[in-house]
Image (cartoon, rainbow, N blue to C red):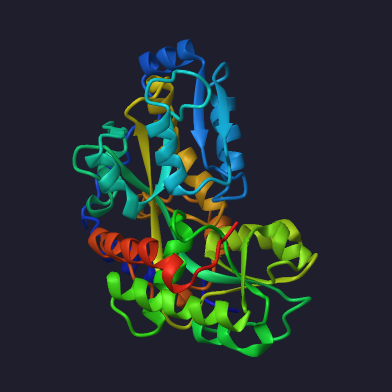
Length: 372
C-alpha cells in the first residue's frame, strides 16, 4: 500500500509556507451576527470563475446557501480565467447589477498587481492568523485559499502508456493529444503549466521558466501534439484531449466523476513539480460587500476548509486544522501519495510575476496557437 500524506509532506508544507511553530488556538468558527444580518439584507452574492468540479466548489457553494438561507448566489462564467475575473471588476466599476462580481478567486501571481490597481478591498477573516504570512497581503487585500500541484490527466482508453514527465509529451505516440485548461495569455492554471514545463527543462522559476515552457509548447505545437482546445473532464472523456495538464485536484475530481468511463490516470510529473496557490479577494466595487465578507468567513471556517479538502485541495489552514485534529481521517486517506509532493516547488510572488510576463508576452510569437 502506498504512503498517504506523510509527516514529511506536512512538515515540508509547514516550512515552505513559513507557518509559525507555535500555532494559536483555532479562531472562532462563526461569523458575527451583525455581518450575517447585513449580508441577508443585501440578499445576493455574485461569484465568478467557480466551476463546481474545481476544488469541490459545487458543494462549498451549496453549503454556504444552506447555512445562510436567503442569500442568492449568482454564478458568473464558471469557465473564466483569472484575467477575465479582473476584467469583470474593471468593466463593472459603476454597475451594481448582476454582472458585477463581489468576490474573485485568483492565481497568486495576479494578486499584487490587482491590489496596486485598486481593484480589491481589504478584509481580514476571523481565522486570519492561521493563514501563512507569505501567501497573504499584510493589509488583507488578498489571501491564499488552497494549493495543488501541476499534473497530467490521461484517458487510458486512448493512451496506452502514460507520460511520466514533461519531456515525454513530445513523443510521436502523443500526436494530437496534449491540451491545457485555458489560454496561457490569461489563465493562471495554463501559465503555471508552462512554468512547470520550463522548470522540468532546468530553468529557474521566473522569466527563464516562462521562456523554457514556451519552447516546449512550441515544439509540441509544431509536432502536432498540442491541441488548442480548453481541456475539461468532458474533452478527456470524448477523446478530444486525451492528455491534459492541470491541477491535481481538478484531475482527481474529474477521475472520480468519470468513474471509469473512461478510466483515467492522474500522474504528477517526475520533474518540474510546481505547487500553485490561489487567493481569495473582495472586489473594491462589490455591490454586496457584506455578503462578500460573509462568503470569506465561510470559506475560511472549518466547514469551508474541509469542503475544499474534499475536492483534493490543500486549504490554507491545513496545518493548523491538522494539528487540532479537525480533518476527518477518511479525507486525509484519499489524498495522493506523499512522494508525489516531495519535490514540489513553491515559487515566490516575484518569480510567478516574471514567469507570467514572459508567457503572456511570448505566447503568440513563440507558440502561436489560439486556445479556445
